[in-house]
Amino acid sequence: MSRSVERASQPPLAIAPPSSIAPASRPRTASDQQAALRLIGLAMVGRVLRNRRLYEQIVVGAILAAVLTRMGREKGLRTISRLIAWNTQEVQRLERKASRHRRGR
Image 1 (cartoon, rainbow, N blue to C red):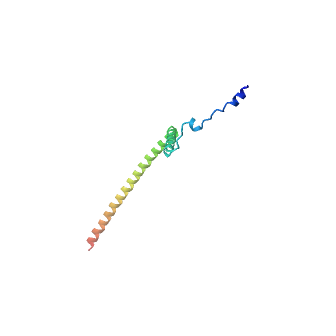
Image 2: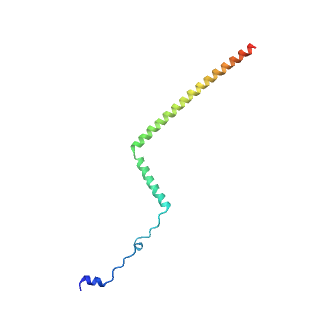
Image 3: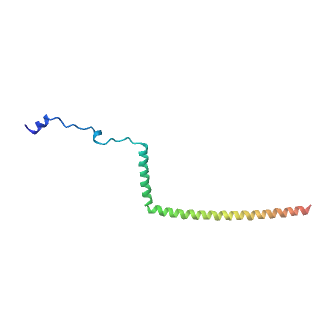
């Protein structure tokens, strides 16, 4: 007999279902998705932190913020000092007016 005839007389090999070959996969849960998103976010943060341009922009932004803060304080102090000077002049003017009014009676 030829080999092909021998194989034809033998029963075919059993093919196992896929679930018996591979370990049973569990369904994806929300925590798996959150973990995946966290890993992606961590990778993005790592990539951003390695960017030199970002560091330059952060330094320029910090310097700009410091300058604007100082300018705001100085402007605020000048405004307050002007307001105090105006208030002092007004008080003196009203006191002179009141003293003239008392003398005139």
